Length: 416
Image 1 (spheres, rainbow, N blue to C red):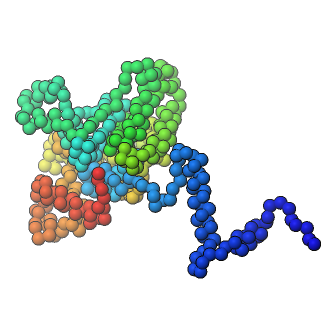
Image 2: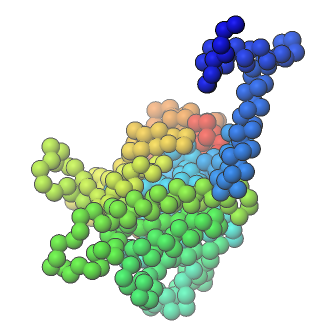
Image 3: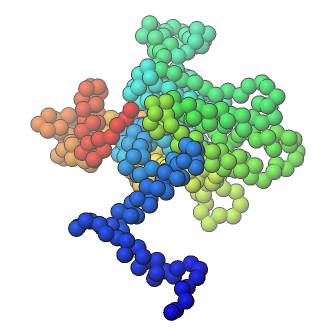
């Protein structure tokens, strides 16, 4: 009689044992049933051991907020990013000074206020001068000026009509600004303290948009200890931002106040500077601590100031604005990189939204361009872009045309 083998069975013996035990009904795989049972047991065991600290669940039960978008109102850009910046993500606005980064940020804030009304919640964290209420007011943001600010504004302009004063005082939802305190911790760790405040707001899940402005000039604890004559420690800000991003990933996965996924969109504004030293590209740009955000960005928009715009298109007359070019350097969550576009920016008026919508509507086939005439179905809007844009000053027509253009491109996305 042969001796029975001791020790662990061979792979062939294990497979033979499984096959001999597989006795399922006709047309049903007992092996698959056994595997499903094993996986169910694994999930139960893991979830029990972790006690809710982390949960393993089928993908069909995982809820996401990426379908909710934060639009800019600039049709060509919104088309390139699948309707807007996705909720539950980090996005970046990058570019040189005067490239329109803060202006486009204000457009995101304005659209949040228009879409959410009293439920709108925005927070602004600036490591520079803070939020510019005057600029925000000009860009259509409800900035809720206080009595003193309104009186100063009135004195500067000579007088304010009732409508202008109401616009200055207009309040929509909640708009918070994160400011540095005067405590010992704030003095010793200014950047760390403000970023911890940002984390707390993200974890609350109550804000639709949180802005971090001028993050590349944040003063870290290591730099506070240095005098102006001492060499700063290398990459102290990059290390801090890397730690922040690691924590951001965990924070943004937290459960929102309604029991669903966190719907906060975090937008970081970073200033670009000319790259010092040798570079094969004379137009190369760099950003302090910029690469620390590189792996976390869902959408990265690079803004560049372009050709000046002169009154009546006459270079001998005063400049009244400029063209701004945008490019999607990185994109995930429903969009892709590489898209680019240009819009006109007029000082004191803002972006030429109507002109941008005309171009996008023609590209998607919503408008017809016959020679110089723009037509919307059987209705002629005007001859030439300038005249057609005048017709879009009708808010109802503009809203209808914008909605149809987005749908024609396949983006019937939620903005709330």
